[in-house]
Image (cartoon, chains in turn yellow, brown):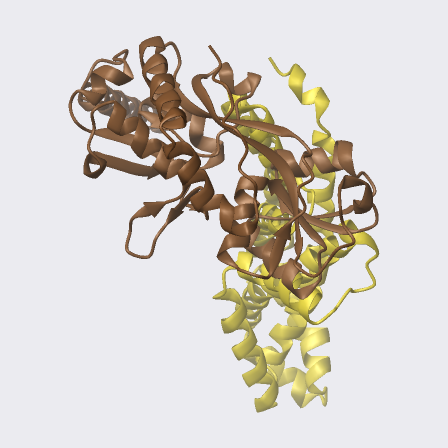
Length: 222
Length: 281
C-alpha cells in the first residue's frame, strides 16, 4: 500500500521543511526581540516604526509576503541574497519572508512577557543607574523570555506549518512534493494527504511537548 | 468519576455524528448512485466540471459566464445529450479534486484539460480523447534563441508546482535548466515579461490561451515535448454514458464545430490546429 512512497524523496523534502523552520525561527527570534525592544523603547520614532511594522506585516497574508519576496525583491529589484541557482535563491527568499512575518508574532509574545515583569524592577534598575539597554537586557528580558516560552512554542509550531507556503515560489519542501504526488498518484490522494499530515504531526508534536515542559520549569514563580 | 464523564460526552458526540452521517446519506444525491449519464441528462440538467482559470480552455468571464474550448466541448456534449445550454451548471474542478468529484457525483462529467493517464483510469472512465495537446514552450515574442528542449540548458524555465510538465523538464528534457516553479501561471508570465525567466512550459493549449490574451508579447515555440490526450472524465463503469459522449465528440469533429472552436481559441497565438485525435474504443 505504501510502496509508491519509495519512488519519492519524502525524507529529503521534510528535511528542507526542517531547515526552513530552523533558519526562519532563529532569524525571527532575533528580529522579533529587536522589534519588542523598539516597541518599549523611550524613543518615539522607534516605537512608531515597530508598531507600524508589526501591524502591517502580521495583517498581510503570508502568501503575499513570500510572493513579493520572489516577484518584487528578486525579479524586479534584483535582490539575490548571495544565492546561486534557483533553488538556493528561492530558499533564501522564503526564509527572509518567513522572518519578516513571524518576527511580528515573536515581538508581540515577548512584549506580553515584558508586561509580566513588575514595573518596580525596571524602576529599581534605573535607580541603580542602568541605561535603557541594560535595564532591558540584564533585568527585564531574561524574565520576560522565561514567561513566554509557551506562547513562543505556539509561534514555532505555526511557523513549521507556514513553511508549506514556500512552495508557492518553488522551494522544494514537503507541500511541493505533495502536489507532485497528487498529480502523479491521483488514485491514492487520501493516502498522500495522510502521509504528509503525519509528517507534520511528527515534526510539531514533540516541539509542543518539550517546550511545554521547559516552559513549566523555567517560569518565574511569583 | 471524571473519566467516565469524559467517556459519556465522547459517546454522545459519536452518536450525534453517526446520526448526522445517516441523515446526510439519506438526503444526498437525489437519484440512484449507479444512474448512467444519459439517464441523468433526461432530467434536463447537467453539472459539468471545468477549469475556470485557463484562458482559451476554461475561463470565467467578468459577467459570471464561462468561455473556452473545453466549455465549447462541454456545451456540445450536453446538447447531444438533450440538455439546453442554460441548464448546464458549470463547476470548478481543481486538478487535485477531479477524481473525487466524479466519484462522489458532484459533477456529471469533467472537461478540464484532463489528460488520460493509467493512474486516473483506476478511479474514473474517460471518453475521448477530444484533443491532443503537447507540452510546449512559451517565450518572449522577440526571443529567437530557444527553438526546442536542447537550448534550454542553462536557461531559466518556469512552470507550475507539481505539474507533470515541471517534472518532465527536470527528469527528461533539460535537467540542467534552472526550473522556477510558482503556484500559478500568472506569476510565470510576470517573470517572462520582466526577463527573470526565459521560457514558460506546460500544455500548448494553455500557453496558446495566455499568448492570445497578451497579443504580441509572447509566442509559442512549437516544440512537441510530450503528448497529452485530453479526455472527458466520467464515473467509472458508466459505459452507456461513455458511448454517448464519444458519439457527441465524433459528431462535433465531423460537422466542423470542433475545428471552428479550436481555431477560435488557439488560433490567434499562431497555434496550428491539427486533425482531431481518433477516439479510444
